Image (cartoon, rainbow, N blue to C red; front, side):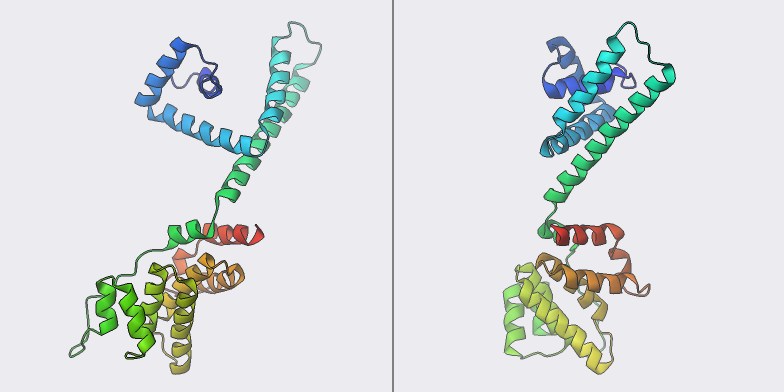
Length: 255
């Protein structure tokens, strides 16, 4: 079976609908297992079918398809070729629009703050370089050992002060799913830098704060901070704030 044949999509759709004859079904399943292009089309059709069902559009598209098939099977038609092409073009455009709306809606309702957070969060690796005479702090040691509760404990005891301890506590809070604690710590890093006119871990704190806002459903704060990062070409995380990420947060806000 040639995967370039125009019947391939029809065969795949019939297979999804469960109306493909047994012989053709077996042959198609063999091709699905062996041909990556056919398999990709199959997966795309499956996703589209789910989206269409979600929006209740399957019946509408089926009606358009039946009307088109009726016209194609009618032996005599007085309609001109130009009008026929226009009619089919409109029908196809309507079908495509409905499918696109279905996919958009499917992705919209599948979107969640946890998913957006997970897709953009990456574990922060501490640098192994340090200045002469500087020693590893207790908070840094605990963070390297992934002992996040200990990092929070050290932070709360105020035995070690400074932007690094605040930042590590914020990261640890994120690892422990404590959004409000993470937000407080990252904001403190930014405030310390504002007061000292320094930039120690400022960019890092801003990026992880924006992710904290997303998971905490504070979308307005997240968008404001992400826009600031996006507008600053020199920001360490400028390239992380993509148009896709901004669009996803706006969709979450509108839900």
